Length: 580
Image (cartoon, rainbow, N blue to C red; front, top):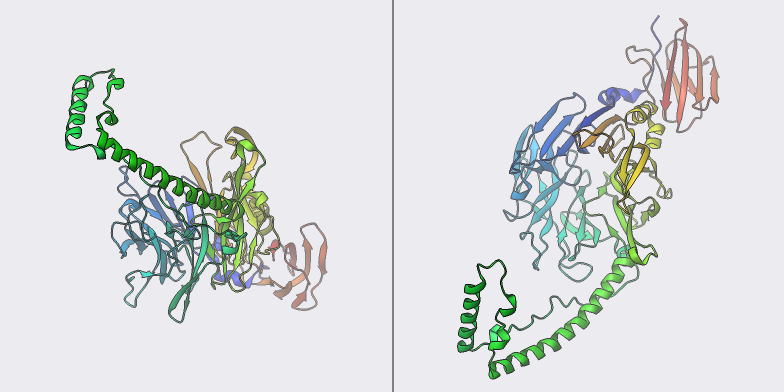
């Protein structure tokens, strides 16, 4: 008699995911996982590790102590389904690379030696998005953004060609040149790209979406109604104020010679002294003759008038700008996700909140935002949880982290569910066995820091899930958290965890070929000698109990966790938990 098997048909397509077991990785900072869940990438202190989660194989690229070699990756989904990774070998050089078949290949850029980055790659490894610098990073005003959005597209020869510069706004919401215009996420076919505009001041960020229509790229700014909800009109920024005249510029040749001689004499007398007499330091105004002083005074009067006019314009501009900052939303920089079909975008919205406390009047809070790119609707979760988005799964489940970056939060795909649940509750719902491991290995007591007062605070019984990401189908979960709970050299831990067991069910005895299968719609199909079958929910309520009269049983059960027990003709019993 063959043994009974309770299994799911689709498990055949996911053997590696089914075999995944929970594991902790000290001093790994896993920041990305491939859409298919096969590869993960860790970057930490210049060291890059590409992890094959199916075979357990790892490949490491080690940076050097001098920092001249420091490996890293971009800000989006940096690894494709075949393990191709986009990143850099030395960020300061401005060179950008992709890693394929264990070899690094440099990508061409618009201007060498500027700041360049590759942020994301499509699942098939065909298109990369990122940013190319047009000028060096500087606090000086520039006629263009310091970095602009680009795509690299793989040619028929397998190589990536010159970057394709995407269109972008030349002025920001304030009417000035933006610092950066970015590209951080791609749809699967590369026809839709998500990025951000970072305004001139660096204090406002908002989404930009690039769309390819029949070979022509255009852009849209889908969240401007939230960035400036009160339609505040900003006057023109007057720029830098007028420079005050310098008295030395008005000295006659004779007066200049006398002033320089006095400076030399003072230096000879005081230059080597440990206690120089600054009271005797020559004042240039004392060397202005009557005519020179008149010209200087006239220039200074003109400066006073010009500066007063400038101040009036500057006050008007910055008063309006401050109102814009307080009334509107911004979005967390370099954070964003795009659905596979390019129809939905996600970013972390930031809101300025008036605390009512004069000593600390304003604070910021974050919440995930869902942008329907088809309808233009934007849905923002509750700011009270103050959570920054870290990843979005294929079904729209949003992963986020609290402000203290210790506890993960997970939001339902339903945009009307405004509050998220703790990461551990989410795991309990999709994989009780993983939840048990998390409770045993990731729950800690420690002394932390209050994120608002920065004072020490005792933290008890905390699931330190920190930043959480996943494969698209949530079958692979990855968590990372700073190590506050151990007095060891380990700075950070990453965890690779089994996530959703296949939506159709789980294998009871994968070694045998005779089975019972339950589908997503709750229909049980029997392929074997089963004399008794019981289905109950996790609360013990019996849903079906009896001798199967046919090979197909419609239980009518919906999504949830269930216990299925089956007795074979030989009296053998098999029991399994099933998640639908």
